[in-house]
Length: 199
Ligand code: ATP
Image (cartoon, rainbow, N blue to C red; front, side, top):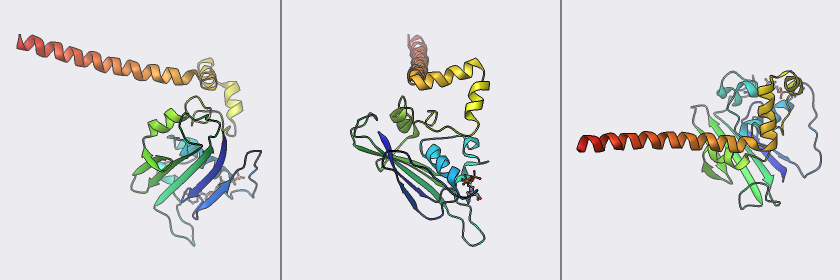
């Protein structure tokens, strides 16, 4: 699997639609300070489901929408679509190309898509779990992240290894199952109470 294309519109400094094509191999983004290089990495993080605006270098989620300049009006929507070549079947979905999309309107409304079909953030998380490219994967190493890893507490470091080895996926599924078990136990208790009342 490899990153094939990135389409950005209205995200941070990208007021015009930009399409970046990657064809395997190594790609480098170069440019003067402040031209938007890191915004490309932010766009990738964001479309993969990042929920923390701090990790996207902003204060509120709306900050990812193009805010306008002295010569250009602000936009009302930010949209990013990332396309992976999945001909090796790394992503557990029956498509050779997988396009994940995210949109955010200034009204706060947002939308996620997989190959153009609206979906939940959970569907994207499930699709990316264990592939190393999810928002918590280590496919994006931010500035200072290596230093943070070295200085982190053992428990936090453990989380990083869990993600890297694919254990997180099972921890997440276990957590979801335990939650469902708890809900079922509550329902059972309610049914028992009703039976007792009826008897
Ligand atoms: P450096 O080389 O200094 O790290 P860079 O090329 O990585 O810089 P970025 O940090 O990606 O640059 O981009 C910063 C630019 O993006 C700034 O000019 C900032 O004003 C602009 N920017 C960020 N958010 C928005 C937004 N919502 N609307 C318009 N412009 C934005």
